[in-house]
Every structure is written in structure tokens, then in C-alpha cells.
Image (tube, rainbow, N blue to C red; front, side, top):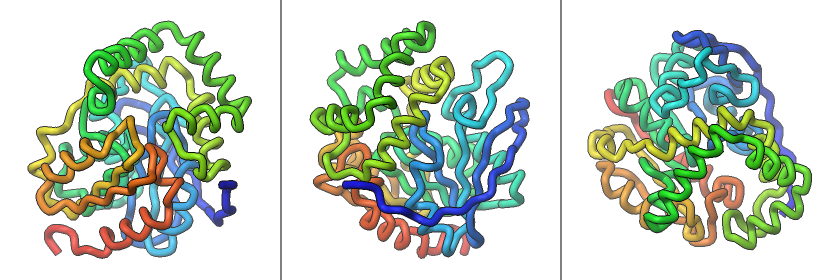
Length: 296
């Protein structure tokens, strides 16, 4: 499926964090704030349909993770933990004068959102987890030996970036071939929005690989499963029947562990279900965001 043009207008700004990192932030629309926490290495164009839809009723806030896109990183290049990314989002809310916000996370954005909830539960009004796991994502998606191997590859690539960069550059330069290869592997689907998928691939390819793989290494070792039973805000968990990176069983376990969470499984969706079936996901998000948050 070729991409459908969407009307997205946003203002860009820089927010300086407490540890001195300049973050690139994108803001669109007016209304109750919604934070969009992206997948690893992906920037705001991957959320284009969501920004266009949500900005009609909400103030939509997105940002480039530290070390990615227009964002810098700390001097020692060590601040890539999921908890640090969560604090970045909270500091962005502070800079924008927003006390509370809903948070929607995709893939890596799910653990980032969970760390926002851990750090400041009162500030999170709604939580949506799209195609992501609460912890140890490689072990959630693969048999243990393969999961451990994937963690090892991430650790190695954070130190030796050349091979990974060459593969990413090739993928970005041959978008049709890349899509066909990844669709054959069921990492994405044949009918995904090709333009948005190509933008996501290009974003990852353009990310500095030391920051990208340090972030992946931090993601691989992160686990917020202990937090799930304590989440009290309205929650939506969306999973894909063909998502082998975050399989349906992981989505079911996550939803079952969060009191009152709604589970939506899309049988034909892959890990990129948010751009394969955006209308279905957006309808579910509208229902979630219409619920009264705690304390109201």
C-alpha cells in the first residue's frame, strides 16, 4: 500500500534537560496533552497519521530520543537507560508547562512510557502500549538462546558500529527491496504504508550507531514488569497476531497484569501495526482518551 498524504503541521523547539542535553521537540495542536514515545531510532514522521488525527483535539508532543535526529547527548554518552528517556519526557512536559499528560508508546516507547509512570504516576492520565513489551523485549520475542544472542549483538554493535551502519545504509538506499525482505520475514506486512515505513527505515539508518546501539543495549536489559500491577490510569494494550518481536502472548500477559486494561489484538498486524491498521488503532485511542483520568 502506498502512503496516503496527511496534513501535519507542528512547531519545533529545543528543550534542555537537567543533565545538559538539548532535545528536539515537536508540538502540534491544542487541548489535553498527549505524548508520543517512539520506537528506537524513529522520529516524528513515523507518527504522521497519529499527529494529524490527534492534533484536532489534543496538544500532541513528540521528541527525538537523545543521540537521535536533532537531539544531542550527554558528554559521557552514557545516559541511554529507559528511565533517562522517561525523565526526558517529563522534563519536556515541565518546559511546556504541562502538569499531566496521556502517553502513547510504540515498541521502545512502551518501556519509556512505563518509566514515566514509575517516576511520576500522578502525572500520567492515560497509557497506551502499542506493539511493545514491558521488559526484556528480545527474550519476550525469541526463544532464550536467540534472545541472548540478540542482546549480545546489540552490545557488540554499540562498540563496533561499522557493519551495522553499512547494513542500515543499504536498507535506506533500497527501500523497495528492504520492504520486500522484511515483509518476507514477517517483520512488517506487504500492505504497510510504504512511505511511512521507508521514512522509519531512513530515520534508523540516519541515527548515529553508537547512540542507537547503546540505547538498544539499555532496552534489551530493561524490565518494568514489576510496575504493571500498580498502574491505575486508563490503559490500552495493542498487539499484533503476526508480530514476532512482541508476540501476542506478551501483549496478553501485559494487559492481564494491569488492572482494568483493555487488550486489542489485531490478527493480521505485524510489529508495524500502527501504520498497517492506523484507523483501527486510532479509534481505540479515541475511546481510551475519552475516559476520565484518575482524580477527575
